[in-house]
Image 1 (tube, helix red, strand yellow):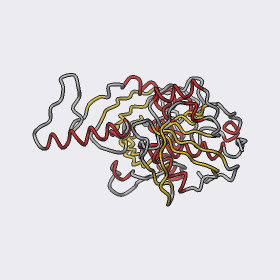
Image 2 (tube, rainbow, N blue to C red):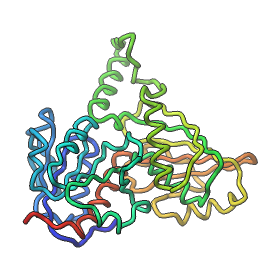
Image 3 (cartoon, rainbow, N blue to C red):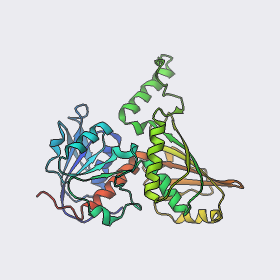
Length: 326
């Protein structure tokens, strides 16, 4: 994902004080994105904060309405789906790179992810269009299956989501619950799941599974027989994905394919990676275990980092073709 050498554009990051939005701001600075201006926005709750953009602290303005984005060339939407949908409906003018699309099916949506979206298709995107960023776990699953070169008849997976996938509010709630539990003062309502020191199926499991299946099929261009469970785990950052595939005629070649695959870091002959090992990683970190019945893959990803990287890759390609407002 090398930085593009295109026009200097006006860039907006909406949701800059959130987990993914902060990663986008950091990457824009690290990769010297060719921007004439980068403006940071948040909801009223996050406004008036400052965010480090390279060596400079930048103020975060409140996004009072979608009209505030008029005049920008690209806008990253690292916000909850309801706000992103409001902005998309308003058609404020810039190309919208929508990270909230992670929870939606891929029907009639251009998914922007390296290795799956062609640069030619991205460069045909016009001002006002929307490019959706796939769920990081869908991207991870599609990346691994593509690396294997396999079209398995059946895939079983368990997705383990840390609380950062729910945003900063969920991180704060887990922190508070953990402290309360350790101090014997935790009081959880009867209709609410305890987050701290607990693992449980996600409330929105059917929606997540539907979105992931649709997005993986769209990226691979093939139907997938996927059986999945989605659970919430009491970790602050990162995601783990366990994948099981029956033995196939080509499975002897899978190790070598994973070694050579772009976007994959294969861990061999050492302890399998933990979720902590994925922090800051720009690849899907994988270990593989084989037995006579099939292959089990253990994958860990930095969800926010991976989503931000996909979003920036889209922006880099768009910057080569988008005329700016200057």
